Image (cartoon, rainbow, N blue to C red; front, side):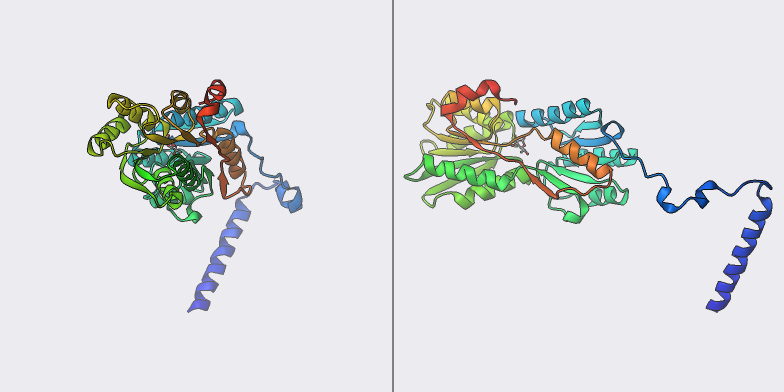
Length: 335
Ligand code: GYE
């Protein structure tokens, strides 16, 4: 049976070839490509920045960090001549997913995704992979399997949390009670910072409460107000996951009649706003988180578009800033 099928196929093929041969233009010379040795075949042209379309479905505009991050991508793309497909998901994962799907449909070369939360990316990452579009995870992490994306570029959020814990220990050497104003629930930044913080926090420091302020000044303020009411006179320190929430929290602390230093604050990002809070005495340590990722992301995007190998994990080098140098450094801060 099998033999018969194969035979039929071969006969069919022979007939097709015969018909093609008869129909061909009589004097047509054999295609030159056929005679060329394989080595001389023209190599596929390497893409340059000007040929590159990169999708950046930004997660939102919740903070000064985010504004600086968006600006870094846009400015770098403009400078290099890369076409950037930019959108703002307003901190909603479903918006980011739709934006990414539109980019896949459009056939962009690379997607660079700053994920608002860690979970729930498997489906769309698989769609990108099936479409042959490499994805760079930028800034926060995802929980999806590493085979679904090409690389991650961003900060070590757990390390930032650890540094924050160490600073809190130094600020409260006798121990004390603190509250945590956390970032967006389920985001790699909030999860990592909370984890690292708890790993280094001294045993004599108690975390009274932890609530999210969604990384915004507007939401940080009422959360701090509620803490101040609930734990009146009890709060020695505050770990605040970003400078924008710290700005809101300080407004609440001021309104409650407290003075700079009454509540020791460790914040994260190192934005100009955070530096100003240090200058004014409200924040005692600001753990740097660098948003200026545009150059690294677009350099990697070009490599990926050309099928080159890239580092699977690129972590940003970061420091901790203190009030003593804040006034001197503020003018040179880029965000
Ligand atoms: O710390 C915060 C922003 O994911 C590292 O998101 C980022 C964080 C940053 O809203 O300000």
